Image (cartoon, rainbow, N blue to C red):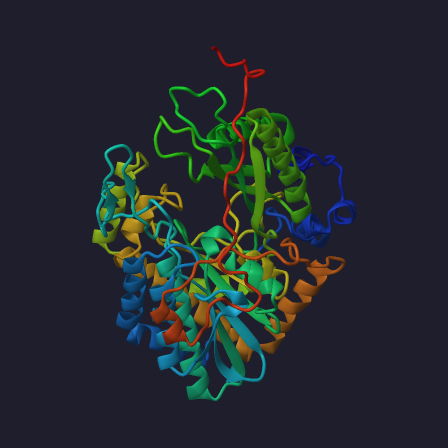
Length: 565
């Protein structure tokens, strides 16, 4: 028995599956898990026997033209990168960032249609005609609390909101979506220029995606058919290493639980009903799930949204927002239902009224080995991002600030390897739903130093420096070169599509979002609507959203005593 077999047996047990489970039995029990976790078993691919293929990436005049265009327009792409970084707009409110991206695409021959999937800050930009049809993912949302000055080696927020009792930081690109967006735009523009110069047939679609950090935009977009008709979808994400991958991600559900009570004075609390008590009880109850009810592939985490304004006012409303992750949609539902039961019990114990609001959900990602191998071969030919001595010095400063080994930036590519024997949990992406509609190419590029996690201020510090610029330009080249190969090598594209069909055989994709669910939305500024030619609200949206008002009666400690006379 190999180490792979032993590891696989142990991991399956962590999933709650027998260590002798076969690919066939796993596929029957959970088809989605089988298409990801069991597919390599079924095809006999293991870390021990895998050999990375070469010769897939072909040199061509079109590919040379696309790479040359990126080099020649690096200044334009860096400008877009930094513009999005400076806007630092939160999910579903990326008004200036989305228009900056769309303007550049439109100026280079793409037609732009706004409001994809019913989201004002989402768009679809199209170039060319006929097949094949290739999609590119663009994101541009920032994260709350991760503001940071550019190139600052210690934590130094660019936006600091003073409050005598609880200061906060502004938003920042702590997941480097400014780099992601600019890199994907650069790739799409480069391929379009190469198509025109070399009369290549095909259609490019650039999807400006809003609200990825909240796993919203693409989840609703796929359900609405925005991503239908693609032959392949090219995506990348910033990381602290550079590699191609066909691994999976976590499926996820997002919901808020609002507890409504009755306000009163904190100094005379008898009879008050605290929404904060409800949220804290729910959080505490959910923590007791972790040991006996959450598999190694599961995760849940939460944030209290509105916990009250002062200690002497019992808050009559409090919301707690949960992300719930697991290895497949079916497994998410099991864990989600347990969390909901905690919410019900917390409301009963705190004598508050519970409002449960489902927001969004997405499947786990479906990998594509052929696509990863093609991307990897192009990455090897192009080489890793070229970081300078100054970049390495800055990286070491960040690593020192965070207590990590001072190793600087990566100088090599991570070799392509099969996914681990099983998925033990991790991040999620709403691009996952797209991967169940069409073959998806996934590339990760070193955009911040090793040891630094995504969603950290040090990512924000790096994302508009030369480190971020070199990552962005490298990602643009990796995606552009891979896209040109897909346009000029129909046999490779056909192999990607065959693998996709094999993996999804017996799996019916169905959105985890219930029919009729209204997505989380924010009303855009009037000038944004005018510029983009949109009207508010979008079709089918109830606006304004009905208010949530606490109307509970005060509690009692016993029968009212008769008045004293």
